[in-house]
Image 1 (cartoon, rainbow, N blue to C red):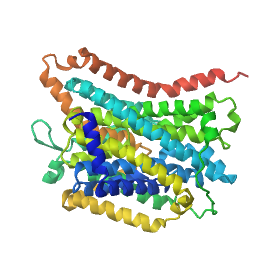
Image 2 (tube, rainbow, N blue to C red):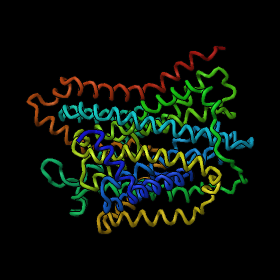
Image 3 (cartoon, one colour):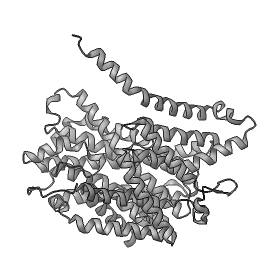
Image 4 (cartoon, rainbow, N blue to C red):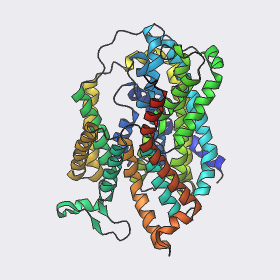
Length: 504
């Protein structure tokens, strides 16, 4: 079948009652949870992982993709109306978006953000459709040496480019590699780290239980502990959507640059929307002629971060579907959902599961249109989304999380793993160990180990083969250089700042 045939089949499946219902419900649920600070669409996706086992792979991917699109678009609502970001990708939107609300113009900022969401995600998905097939065709010619080096590079990119303490990021990676090593050896199936001699550990730690405990349960627990739920806010009146024509034309080059930032950063493993929005906003503020308006209600600030974080969605789909490497946290949940169905995501995924790939593309485009229509026609309802009772919502989430953990293994073993991972997540949060390096390493370490061992077995030169093959060597060097930069950059910045500080 041709690409066009696969795409038409995917659209036909989505145009059925079931397909359209999944996309609409997923999109609207994503918007609601994306708007509520502290939850986000990723929480819903984790909870739905056990349920997705009963669904067809194509419908499961359509649902997950629509939740992702809706959640990214909904994040700006809390940022603009409350001054509290609904998602980490919309943190920067607070700087200028909330200023509009404080001066009585929330509709202007929301209209710009809604249109920016559409400008960001739909063209980036079209880019992914055009590029992914070529990247996958190149990837199938690679051997285990390149795959191992690519996974190695992806993990180090996440660590090297993440903000904060690099040592703590490496600790998170080490924890993930250890937990992923529990269970059967991938080559000879012998047991590893069978604690207390229990055979339950032979199957390892189920990814559903790990994610339900480490993310969904931990988030709810910490929200209660910190009492960080949204307090009663003054009523905000939101008018209907008004297309900001003059602002779009005035900021046309800013829009283009921000979209490119988002697409490129989304392609890099583990970075995604949060990094894309921060870098796009910082760059545009730096090159702006009048910097004094930024942070005080500059419409370009809303455009830059919202276009960048939505454009990162399409960029992240390329390494996910072509290489099997998640570009962001949502990609991890996509891989988990497919693994539950017995489908391995990797360089052969595009060739062997083309129907699923084009279902993801079609669902992304349809969801982008649906969320734009919902947010433009229903903008007046945005304040009501933020008044959902938290005590009811959190209770339902925690109940579904533990129920899903039990269902994932059919025994209390899954529930115990989820509780243990919840405690681990709280400890990581307390010691400020970032979760993204942990998550990437946990997903990629089985592929990394398998391909390293295959590389040694297939070669007569041992480890030298990893450095004599061009692409393998390049990936390894890039990962090491980014990691070295991450360790050295604080010292470099301090040295530059010391030179600029006047003496005396």
